[in-house]
Amino acid sequence: MRSGGAPKAHSLALRVVLSTIFLSLVVISITGSTLYSRLSTGIKQVNVDTAIIEARSTIFSAQYRLAIASGNPTESVRDIFSSVITSATTVGSNESGREVVILQVPGTAIGKTNYEISSNLVSNSSIPEFLRKKVRNSDNLKSSYVRIDYAGSTSVDGYAVGQRISIPNDGDYEMYVLFSLTDQAATLALISNSLYLTGLALIILIALIIWIVVRQVVTPVRDAVRISQQFTEGDFSQRMQVKSNDEFASLGNAFNEMAESLQKQIARLENLSRVQQRFVSDVSHELRTPLTTLRMASEVIHNARDGFDPVIARSSELLIGQIDRFEQLLEDLLEISRFDAEVAVLEAVEFDICGSLERCIADLSLVVKENGIEINLNRPRNSVFINGDIRRVERVIRNLLSNAIDHAEGKPVEVRVMASPEDVAIGVRDYGVGIEPRLLNRVFDRFWRADPSRARTRGGTGLGLSIALEDARLHNGELEAWGELGKGAHFVLYLPRRAGDQLHSRLISLKG
Image 1 (spheres, rainbow, N blue to C red):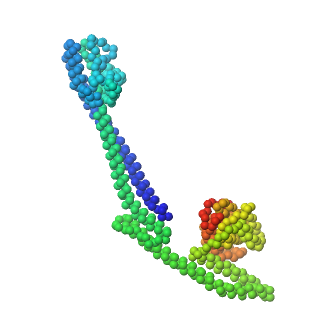
Image 2 (cartoon, one colour):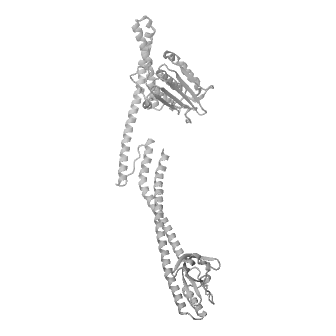
Image 3 (cartoon, helix red, strand yellow):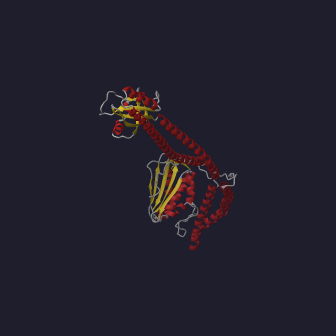
């Protein structure tokens, strides 16, 4: 029992901590995801707005300078493009800053010179076709997320803003300003990692705080469980330590008061039980001497009854019968006192339980004949040997058979024996008056009868079933009962093949 308490208290604390961590993880995940989503959206929007503003300025500046340079030689136009690219880009940096790509509009008249150009060897394929169509079909800025490809198979995420421009005497072109999103991705990664680390730190701190709080709550409960288990083992000296003035202190004080009261009550009951046991034992022993004298005198009278008046002769028969019953009662009381004092011992021997059962049936054959009933025995063909106290086992069997005969009401009694390598079971089934199911838990109580007012064909002490149960449990077996009014009763004795071993199975079904 003691080993079962601590894990329960520990599991309670563990369950509280785990459930708190789980709920905190859910809340932190939702909060972190929402925060990351808002930050990501905000950062991306800021970058997009900035990119559009810068691209508009760059494209407008280029268009303006080209308009001014109308009619100038080709070299002047090239110088303008070089100046625009130089001012709009970070030369030599492929993973930050801006890039410029100028493409000729397909289908337009081609001038003497092709002005298609890109900064830092940016591939023309970086501009997706759907964006080019938007730019060609509109006079306004168009933009989209793209993948910026560089010579040498290097590529980065980017954002492209484009607009159609016109070069005097040389046709229409598409000018795109590409913005690398590497810094944005690094910023978002930093935010994401920071949120993860912050969330992990919060979970660890919450778990630590909850663990400390739960320990403060669970420790008094665990102490109460430990002390309660010691109570069940008979140690009533333990008390809870009270060190504060809070609710747990009230619990500890109430628990200690309850323990003190229980200790006193149990001590009083133990003392009363010892007095009662001693009284029963002493009275039983003291009555033996006068009872022996009474038996000797009654036997003399009983043997000479043929010369008496019929009424006196009948009285002598009643006297000897009641003395027999009195002796049986004393014997049962002495046996009960041995069980109560825990001095009953087994005298285990190897014997055939089927032979003992047949012998008990034979001993009761006269009673069976007087009641006009039949006992049907269903036993294994071979002998069933067990190791046990033959006197006690036969006493249980005789008691069950006598009880069934008393209540059979002239109907047959079925006796069944089943055995396995580990266990043996004996069932005694009658079909007489039966027992109310609500009273089954009392059939083994001392001096209890299902119907005290019922006339009995044979007298009894009211201790037989109680002693039978104690005999069965002394073997580490069990005695169980089933019954219904008008359907009879069924008593089954379960015994291990070797006294003291554990029962492995119930070989005979109790109900039926």
